[in-house]
Amino acid sequence: MKLYYMPGACSLSPHIVLNEAGLAFDKVKVDGKTKATEAGGDYRTVNPLGYVPLLELDDGTKISEGPAIVQYIADKVPAKNLAPANGTPERIKLQSWLNFVSSELHKGFSPLFNAAMPDEAKKIFRERLVTRFAHLDKHLASNDYLMGKSFSVADAYLFTVSNWAARTDVDLSTFANVLAYRKRVGARPAVQAAMKAEGLIK
Image (cartoon, rainbow, N blue to C red; front, side, top):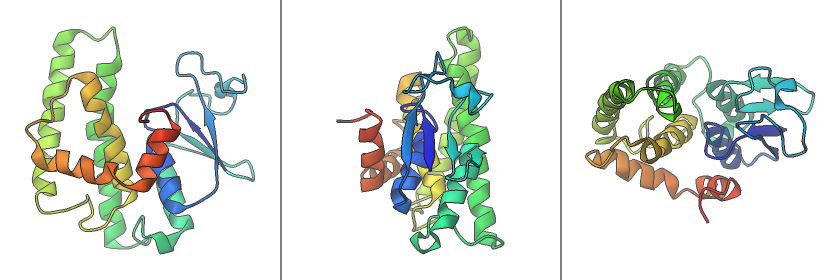
C-alpha cells in the first residue's frame, strides 16, 4: 500500500491509523503547492483533485477521503478494535463522529488557512469552531475517547484536526478535557511515530 500525504495535513489521520493497525505501507510525500511527489511526478495524475490523503492498494485500487480510508484500514485488522463491526449501532456512532470531525471541524478550519479570507470572515469561523470544541469538551468530560473507553479511527482524525488550532489562532485553553484528550492521544506510540515521520516533532 501507498499513502500519499502532506506533513501535518489531514493525511496524518490515516498515517496514525496505519501505524496503529501495524500494516506495512509506503509513504509518498506530496508538495502542497506544486502537487509534485517526492519522486518528481505530478500527484494530480494519481488524484485529479490534488489533495490528500489517498491510499493506493497493491492492486492499484485508489481510496480517497480520510474517513473512508481509515475505516478500510480498521476493517483489515478487526482484532485491533480500531472500529466497531459494520452493521452495528456502534459503527454508526463511529461514522457520526467521523462526519462531525469532517464537516464541523475540518471544513471549519480550512478557511483559516486561506490568506485571501477576510479577517471578519475568519472571526466567524473561529467562533463557530469554539462552539464545536465546547461540545467536545462536555463529551470528553466523561469519556476518554470519542467512542468511550477505547481509541478508534475517529480519534486519529480529531487529534489531527485539533492540531491546527495553534496555527490558526483558535484558542483551546479553556477546554481542559479537550487538552487532556489531546495529551492522551498524542502520547500513543503510533501517533508519536507518525508525527516524527512527518517531521512534526523531533
